[in-house]
Length: 81
Image 1 (tube, rainbow, N blue to C red):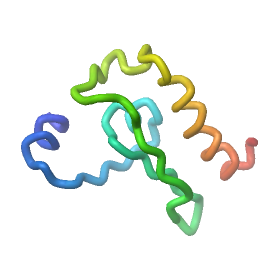
Image 2 (cartoon, rainbow, N blue to C red):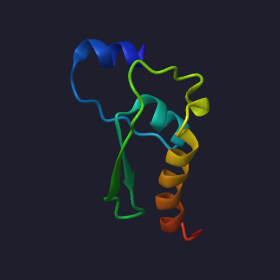
Image 3 (spheres, rainbow, N blue to C red):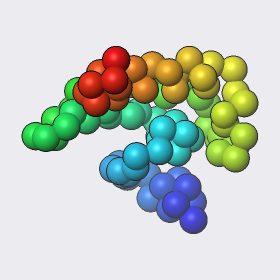
């Protein structure tokens, strides 16, 4: 339903999630936020064409590299990197 709404409305939607797989599957761009105070740390373009198979996106070539890139921005802010 979310993807249908997005496709039909042709409007910008800001979707907030803590799930990187979900962010990659549903987004054209992912904004990684800092901890408090929440600020945009970086914006990463998602290179996968639409429509996407959101159930199997994790198998797409380049998915793991993109996931790792996003995670590296997060783990630095979490003090893990």
